[in-house]
Image 1 (cartoon, one colour):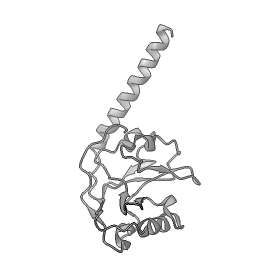
Image 2 (cartoon, rainbow, N blue to C red; image 1 turned 120 degrees about the vertical axis):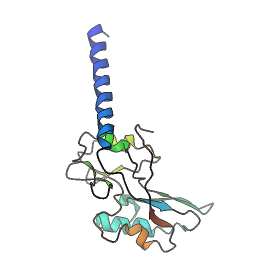
Image 3 (cartoon, one colour; image 1 turned 90 degrees about the horizontal axis):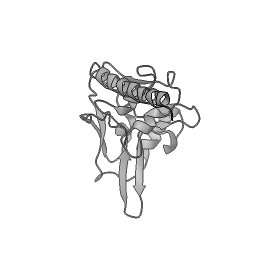
Image 4 (tube, one colour; image 1 turned 120 degrees about the horizontal axis):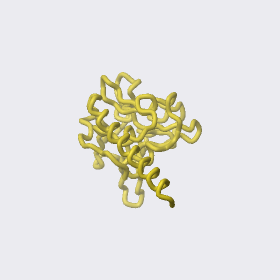
Length: 184
């Protein structure tokens, strides 16, 4: 590699780091996320009602494939876990999005972090940047855009998964108040 190529690669890397830092600084100008979905493993039966209602509300079809909340099931041990966006204060998905405020957005009134499918190009950077495993941001196979839990921001009564959980295993509470600046 020539000296000019090395300098060019180093400059590009430095530019990306500066852009990410600027994106994180810009996050402080947005309201903090106020809410997130909380899960009580002692109450969950793994019925999937939350996934069904989420997918029906957001996609008009049932099943976990397009639900913004997923239930991880270990049927042999009768253990279940809810996988849903934590609504971090400084979400890494937002920091890496090439179109922040157009694709990945933060509601200025509620602080909810959400994807606007009209602005999303489906690049997948947000999926790769999510620190949670499995990532809580996913790409919609049919539409080619990202999607994640937005606390049913278009439903005035709040998240449908919480409303329809028959065991009361889901609730809305304070968001995860930690900064996540980089990927997994």
